[in-house]
Image (tube, rainbow, N blue to C red; front, side):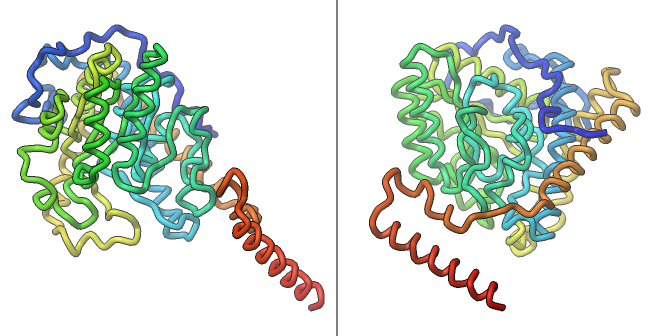
Length: 388
């Protein structure tokens, strides 16, 4: 069985249903406790009128993409160990946030990812090899951002917050109903660009959803050293931005909250800030030793809150998922990983002189000089090889 990248997009139920946006007059403060619709074991909690449960077919598709996303993440981690990637920031444990976020927006909306959103990008339907091109040290962005309405993965913290605000404002100015979704890590909320972006979006009512995945650590710095606020969701209040916090390991709640946040922005009510409480199960990247700043008991406690198992339990209880369906989705995930392995094991052909392409629209004299120096060195090396 062969699974193509487009298989991630298949059978998406998302969408053109009517969603009532939140009342713009509601208080800016988030709920005192994170919104939760499933308990830790996957048992449904009392329904909420403010965050109605998404349709069951949307939740089944959410589960499928989460399983594929986790398998992609595991495979990408293995490729790093095999030397096929220079670095890989895993998002294992954050599957509910990664996948529900892209299901909450339309294909015509824009997504602004950080370096950790590789899983979100493949869930959006982008070719996984193109997603990993950045991390193998080739081009800085392997996909065409305008084609897939997805900005390049952003390594500098929080700069995507400003980009999202600007694009959303421009789209609204031209009469389009585009929403921009900006992924943010908890550490990025300490950066100036986060505050500048959300302030601009609030003043101009730009349709942006700022989605903070609070996974407890900015590399090795714990949340307690990042903020004294009751939660990161409270950071929207000072800018007049309504906010909410959600259990980021509850896939049903994440999709419900983000769906309402997107509806709020699309309705012309300005930006919305969502904080998801989740956990990064793996190290910050393959170059990080997480045991130096967190202990195994903490990791084990979060492992018991596994978002994939949580949703699977719930869908089984609803009768829309059984052993055969779980096995079929797992088979799709394995085929997806096998296809990724095969294509990533093909050594790319790289022209060293391409290093100088696209640095400037018009190359500077210094750049031309450097390019010619490299050209001469390559020619000399080829002559030596020929003589040998």
